[in-house]
Length: 352
Image (tube, rainbow, N blue to C red; front, side, top):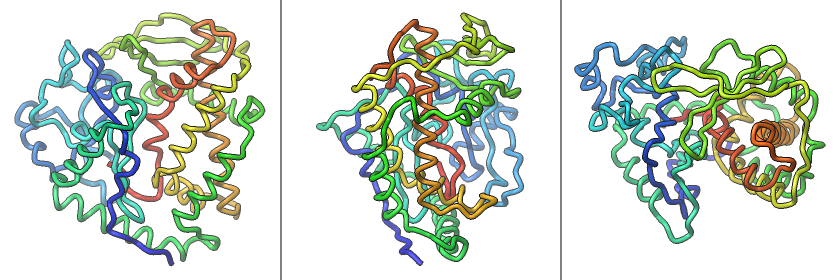
């Protein structure tokens, strides 16, 4: 059994700055959770009793969780105004208040950032997000914090008995960093299975599950595979869509990767594995697997899969923009394209 602590880790917020960008609103295209215990829940219902919808689940912990309604089930939150500002800002949900910070309840509580947002940046002299994280934890409803902490503690207390080769999150992180530092980051990482998985994502029949991307000029883009054509679709606030370009997906090739691109990707992978959420994903994969694969093998496979997925997205963006090589700038855009999902992937533990 490994130690369960009450520690709150803010290390991943250190040296991070943040400013909400004018005319963005991209985070409002993701269905925000809101719980009955939140102070603003009833206030939201007073504004619009149909403003939220119940989260359908068999998990008793999430039985009182709702999500903000979206235009046509695919556009932005119905409370986002035409100027892409929140129409219920004073009573907005907790999830909206803490963005781009995520809170993971596992062996401990750890706060980290979602890099899908263009509004944050690295600044060694800044303490903006760290201070915001501490303020969030102070204002977190006591009932919610207690419930999530207890649930996570129960989950992690039981983990050694469920896994024959259980490794603590700290050791798992060390081994993961070792793999990231020595792995060969190149197009050779991308397997046929990675390509098939990406094709499956692009082919989803659920519009909300298709890969989405925020451009530098604040356009909301969605990518969808339609036969052989990969469509680039512009998404509007009210859910209307417009195809703004397409490429022949069958001819999508992997472009050469520059040295600075490989370094940028490696640095991103280091950030990913330092998240406690990463260990939670590995534990969940281990519990759900049909055959008994060693935990460390799951780690290397998953890290390689993240790198491959990001390279595929980088090549997709490069194809639409006409780039012949994948450089560090393209990798940075691919991170924005990828991180929203990776920061909230289902895991062993609870996420806010």
